[in-house]
Length: 187
Length: 280
Image 1 (cartoon, chains in turn blue, orange):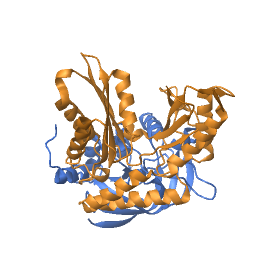
Image 2 (cartoon, helix red, strand yellow):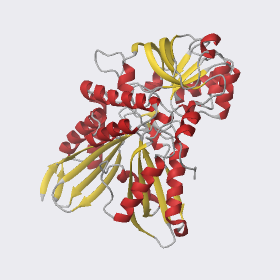
Image 3 (cartoon, chains in turn purple, orange):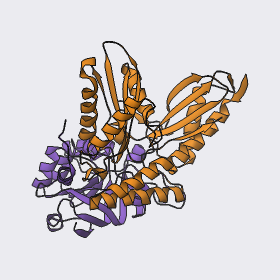
Image 4 (cartoon, chains in turn blue, purple):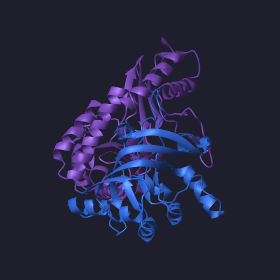
């Protein structure tokens, strides 16, 4: 299990060094977006309008954080299930998105787009929201405050922990890991 | 008749909503610790360490274990000798959720109407299961349920000829299809029997049984052991990245059924298996 300390935004070279199963610690900025924000970004792209932030080289974190307690920048902030964003993801990758952090399976179309546009899909540990919040240092609203927890926010992170799931070479850490430990035929 | 003011129910639900989200139950914690011992995958071990560290941080800081603080699922067993005063019970339950989620800095995850809806901004309404029982006590369970694991749950109207083999296949298929999505290691709640709506309730109810406590019916206890063993042979592992520990527990609840029907429901619960109870 190789470890990488990466700074955002990401470029082709950084992404090419990542292999499914590697550990990643991200420092820099990541943007939050989940179901409703993806719907809106997708509509903007379809209409040829600009996104609320420059997406080239950026990383999107699929998260809807809990409210911050007084004195904190954010509440618990673990990943949500990525598959719900699959429908919108290839268009964002085509627009320059380089990295995604979430949890769970991606569609065949997304995995193909990850190869085509040289990007990376990483998983953070689902249900470890209190731990992950410790690596988030600053939070700034970028767009769509009306979406509440689903608004787009810019997070400054330090050594944000993640694991590479889908790399540009077509590998899938879920499939590989499961195949290694499976001792029963699927029903 | 014993009189109970519904405001006491609101206060209790507000407290339970917060405690459930901050403090992982001891039985689930113990199961995670033994899962850590049993796990052979290095990635799986590292993930279980993070999950264990996370629940400790949540406990110490009184922060939500998971940012998805769930739909508030509330089970209330009311003794038939209780006379409720001071207002509408259902409104009192929602008032408790509203207060607990707002004052506890818990996430508000409810939208209405379900299509193109708006956030209700206070996590109401709760899903309320009311039951009238003998006695003069009120037993309340608050079980916040996240969307990620709920989405991987399934219900099937099988036929009696499908039998136990059908149950095994459906449970394994459902867990397998969910893969990494429901945040494994999971707890698997299974309902068998009843009818369409009752079987889903049985599966949900199974999730409330303490980890380690088998069904009182020996043949169902055997099924629970067998299913847990087979689920853990699927190889999904912690967060789906491969390993021996896919499920911490599998509980099965059963009910009488129609001669023509064989309903089976599988309710998947993530490792943040939160529930907290109180008696008034």
